[in-house]
Length: 418
Figure (cartoon, rainbow, N blue to C red):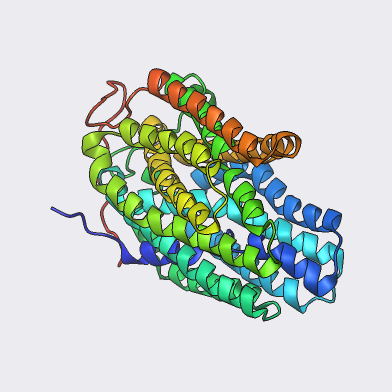
């Protein structure tokens, strides 16, 4: 029997797909062309948003665990992103306003991910979480495809500031869908990975320190860092290869094509994980995603053809489509009954930022010193280390396949709003 899906959550995920990720690739171009910023200032503007996200991510997850106003938090984030996007195009170039807008967007992004996951778990419960998260991820990637496609058209036609108005429009759509969520349908104990409020009386969440004693969580945290260390720099390096020898328009077009190709692949991967993650287990799917990374890194060294490079980048959609889905499922498995689902999610998402930062810094230095091919092979070697670590040290966490006797049996959440 196919579990019933919450359609409002699908809308939330569609419109959240591009409101943060879609801004970065075009902000640098806009600041250069409209305001004639120097590279140092552009780099700082891009960095402050990412730094804000990394700093806030872990406390944001813990706050989402504690608050019962999850819907309000998401609504505030949607408004902040929309307003900040508009401010970037209506200003006459006060640098402080650009930085402030980037920080606001970065902080909002830190709350959106755990907030949406928490509301999903609180509405549908753990038994339907896999199916709903699979659909959520598919709609999220569809939103990314939509946003990247329109954004690429705007960039190529060079409509000043158009991409920022697009993101503001997506933020309005996100806000509308957040408001449509029935707040009464959210079980806040389930939303934090605890036991349903309907069957527990005063059960408190475990201390976060208890999670740090769980070897599964620590092993997975290491693997998350290695995954993004191996993966994050690949697209920027490919984009540089695509732009080499051509003009800026070609670079924008091919970089956008790479993003769209990857996002298209993420949709079926999310649906595959939703249908098979419980029966096959989390481990083989995540390990398959890890194994794609070294294969992809080696392929990049074999060609300079722009169309082939875009095709190879589509493999990123397979790896990240699986990662995005299984990441949430493993955290839900490991924190089940602890009441710390969102705190753990926030902490591990922070580590994604750490891995991505290391990837871009180290791979950039390696590529500058020894060439793009050496940079790709370096990233491939990190991926091999990560895959071996996951294969030998990470146990299966799917409840049906690897039941931990200390975990309580949790009920399915009811009352999903439509």
